[in-house]
Image 1 (spheres, one colour):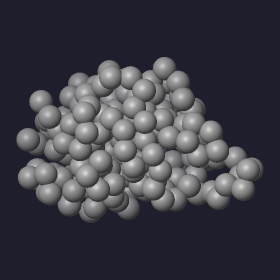
Image 2 (cartoon, rainbow, N blue to C red):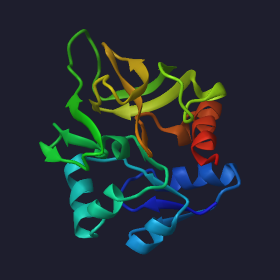
Image 3 (cartoon, rainbow, N blue to C red):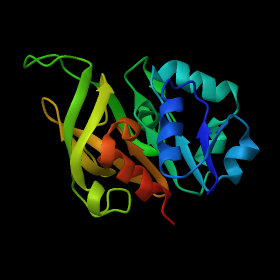
Length: 196
């Protein structure tokens, strides 16, 4: 299994790589289009802000490359948000692969923003990413922006209202939670993504 981790400057690259190693899979950190295109699976990790991450992808010439991929692609946390149309974080145009606009959490109802910690994920449609042991469980989140529930939503989470915990459009998948920090549930998500 040839897995490419897209280098968009995400702070979680090391932990994603380690989680893949626990599943017996090595990965390559890549900003080279040929390496990314040749991979069996592509993961777009991300911790940070949307505007700098999109700027880094543009500078590396990877926006069109990612949009053209036909193999399974998984966006993690900010990486999931970058798959969407736009983000309110910096009012930035994203990759446009998931038809959704990323919005900041409201700070009403005594909710703390960012949303940090464990929360329940509930699968709402059958799908290969959240099959069997990853359809419902507890996952670890760290984010201030979220994707509203829409046509691409595979799973939801509730934090002052439901938001998309996982999305899919064609071969592009995204999870708002950190599978690399979500114990058995997160490893099951990654295992399902890597399955043929």
